[in-house]
Length: 203
Ligand SMILES: Cc1cc2nc3c(=O)[nH]c(=O)nc-3n(C[C@H](O)[C@H](O)[C@H](O)COP(=O)(O)O)c2cc1C
Image (cartoon, rainbow, N blue to C red):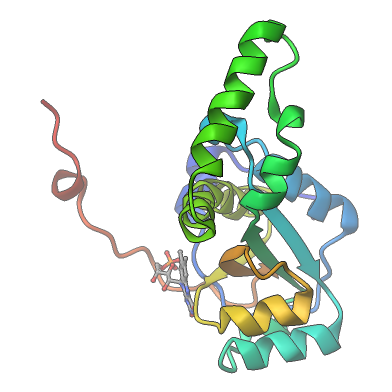
């Protein structure tokens, strides 16, 4: 999209779940930029367990729609993003996540700590922790897309085992959500939210 990027507050105010899209494509360059921005999300120990599969193929989208209980936006959006968390994969490349400026001794200590903590956990605990971290990137992704002129629709209504089988996502991984992505053909519902006083207490 050739619009100037929205500011963060503008993107937040404009984002709504959109379930109807035009035929306008999402370029590879925009797709890469959106995921690059989402990847700047913070994560504990900088683990970055999130992974994204971008689906354009209509046949694959049709299969995903079935797995998502027929949700229309899965096929009428030009792209569907499957966001998943793969802690096993992330831990196997842990060295890549250490800041290059960190002194070697400190880096070695950090790696040992993280491997010790997660190594002692069952798969399910580790992957559910990664799922929480991945929602940070998930939120960034929605706002990055909005900022670049696209709309999105988050989905958790799907059969995760079926989605994993369709996309070849490892069985141990967790899928925080699918995201329909494209140019909006409708406005979506106006925000309906708790007032700030209901969610904030200043002490
Ligand atoms: C993790 C997550 C999962 C969601 N799953 C679905 C879904 O499966 N289908 C759907 O139509 N909307 C889904 N939604 C959209 C929510 O209903 C929507 O975000 C909420 O009602 C607020 O509306 P808004 O996004 O337009 O501000 C999901 C949202 C999130 C964040």
